[in-house]
Length: 264
Ligand SMILES: [Zn+2]
Image (cartoon, rainbow, N blue to C red; front, side, top):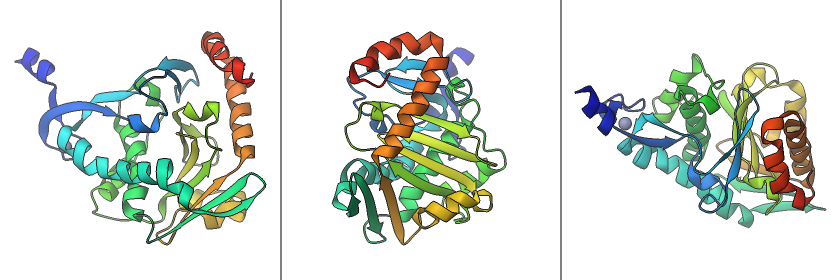
């Protein structure tokens, strides 16, 4: 009996709560790994900061059934993919040097689906036992995240999202990670597909400086703002170089991969 259930991977889906066949659910969906079909990319362990080369992205085969992953959650992913990887380029509102401010209004995007995408990534990482996400733990917010995803509640004061973008076609845009960052209280950053996304769990804990400079750019029903700048990319590369320099194990692998681009 035990053998059979292992083979078919029957378990309780964390989303619908039913006993079903569970599938390989990616924590960060595959399509947000640029060039995922051909290229190896570097995944960062959120706890140790160590790197490892990955091909398909981290998945967990014990959390979701095919219905929840392939229908409900997929709708969040489709909306995020449509905006972040395609339509964004139609909404450049303001350009200065190489800095661009993209602005979508409520008729241009589905706020609920788009917001839920980020919450769903964080929620999956939190419920997952995958080693790469072992320090992602939403604690009491895990159930709240699920209720938001299920449409039971909205809780607009939670899961505040701020999106920065790197210029297109930069080499380090294919780097993917989700980690807890050390700004006060619970804040996470999701780096994927050339974006750097802050998720502040509770708006009351957003640092004053962030509100002062970026307050109006937080995701809201009425507005989706995305800020693009080569400076963000430069900072990103500096940060990566610091990690690479202190992470000897994969340093040589990554150095070989990236040095031709002059980033190390
Ligand atoms: Zn399910």
